[in-house]
Image 1: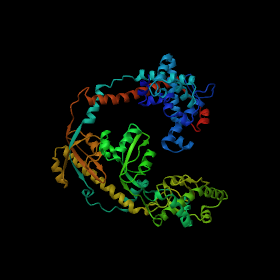
Image 2 (image 1 turned 90 degrees about the vertical axis):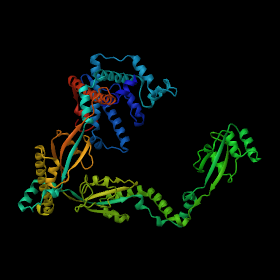
Image 3 (image 1 turned 90 degrees about the horizontal axis):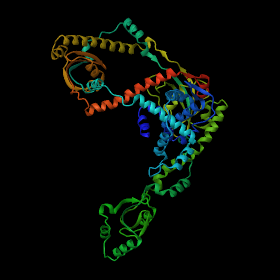
Image 4 (image 1 turned 60 degrees about the horizontal axis):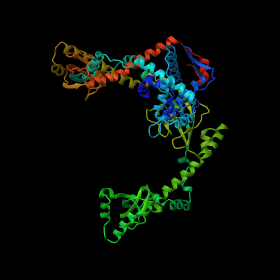
Length: 633
C-alpha cells in the first residue's frame, strides 16, 4: 500500500496528497510543536470546496507547519511579512483547496477505503515497526502521543490520503508516451551540426565619425534609462560587538599567566605514542602470553602472529591520549615506557596486551610567545558577557532621543559615518563603500528605513548589535545630458558600430545564400574563416556562445545567419546536420519515456484538479482568511 504512496510523492501532486499524516510524521511534526491535527467541533470555515469545508484551525495548523519547515531549511526565523512575501499563505491555501477538491471528488464517486487497507498501510509504515521490521502497537501509540494525535483522527486522515492517491493513480497511472513525442525528443537531443563561421570585430565597422550634438541628444533622449542615478543614502552606524568592547590591555599579567597555566596543552603539541595491541579472549590467556614475552620465550610479534594478528592490524597508530576512544587503554598505553609491554588491560572491546614502540614528546609554547593570543581570547570572552548590558544602556539612551553620534561619544564606541551609498553598496563614484558592517543585511535595512525613524538594532554575525540612523536621502533621478555627455558619446559610438556590423553581417548572409563561397566572402571582408563540427543545442563551444549555437539550429542546412555576440558579430553557414537513427524501445528511448511519463502525469493531473475545483466550486471567506494570515488571498 505504501509503495504507491511513496511513488506518488515523487511528483508535485504526490507532494500535495502526501501532506497527510505520514508526511508530517516523517518531517518530525512533534519537533515543530504542531497540536492535534483533528479538532472536532470547529465550525468557522475559511473556504468551502463543494460541500467540503476547510476550517480556520486547519489552515492555521498547516501554515505553522509549513512555516516551521521553511525556517528549518533557511536556518533563520521568518517574520510574518517575510513569510507572506515568499507566498507561504498562498501555498498553504492552494494545498488545502486541492486536498479538499480531491476529498469532495472521492466522496461524489463513492470511493471508500476499507478498514483492511488502512490497517495494512499502518502495519507497513516503518515509523511503527521495531528493529525486526514488525509492527509494534506500543510504538504506534507512543508516536501518535508524541506528535499530539489521537488514533481516531490519525485513521480518518490516513483513509483520506489513501483515497486521494487512488483517485490520482486512476487518473494518471500508466500513461503512455506517444512514439511521435519520443522520436521528436530524440531528434532534438541527438542532432549535431557543423558550420563555417567568422566573427566581425568593431574594427570591421570602419571609421565611426564624431557624432553631432543633435545626434548625441537624440540618442540620449531615447536611452535615458541608461543614465538614471540610483538612490543614495547617508547614514550613521553604531556597532557594539565583543571585538569592539574587548580591552586586552586591561588584563593583568597574573590573569593571563593563570589562564596559560590552566590550559598549557592548548599552546603546543601533545605527546604522541605509537601503540600496538593484541586482543585475547580472556585475562588468563593474555597473562600467559605476557609472561612468555617477559621470559623471552616468545616475541610480541610471534604472540600476535599466533593470535592471527598480522602487522597491518597490529599497530593502532601514532596517537595522542585524547584520540584513543577507550580511556582505559589510553591510560595504560601512556603509562608504559618506550618498548614496554603492558599487563592485561580490560578494554571496552576485550582484553588486550599493549606495547609502545615510539614516544614523541609533547611541546609547549613559552608564555611570552602566546600571551598576546591569550589576552585577546580572555578579553573577547569577558566582552561577550557585557554586550547585552551595553545594548540595554544604548537602548535607554535611544529612548531618550539621543543621536547615535552622541551615544558613541559617551560610550566611547566607534561611529561609522557613511556619506552616500546605493543599495548595491557603491558610492556615487562607482567605487565600493568599505567599512559597512554586515553589509548584506545592513544595506537592505538602511533602504527600508526613513530619516528620523525608530529602528530596531540588527544582530551582527559576531554576536553583537548594529544601530543605524538614516541621515540623508538623495532620490533616484535622471542625470542631465551635460553630466553624462561623455558616456552618451560612448553609447552612441557602440550603437553605431553595432548597426554597421549588423548591416555588414546581413550583406554577407545574402551573398552566401546566393551561392558565394564562404572562404571568398571571408576574404572579401578581410576576416579569417573557421569551421567547427559536433555542435549540440544550447551548448556553447569554444568562442561560439549558446545564443549563436541556438540560431545555428534554427537555420536550415545550407543557409546562413548572423547574430550579435558581445561587441562582435558572428556570421555562419550551416554545412551539415547529423543524427543517429531512432530505435524504438532502446535504452535511451525508455529513459525518455520514463521522464516524460511523469511530465504527462503532472499535466493531466493539473487539468483534472482544475476541472474538479471548477465543477465543485471554490468559495473563500476573505474576512476569515485575513484573521489567519492578514492581507488578501
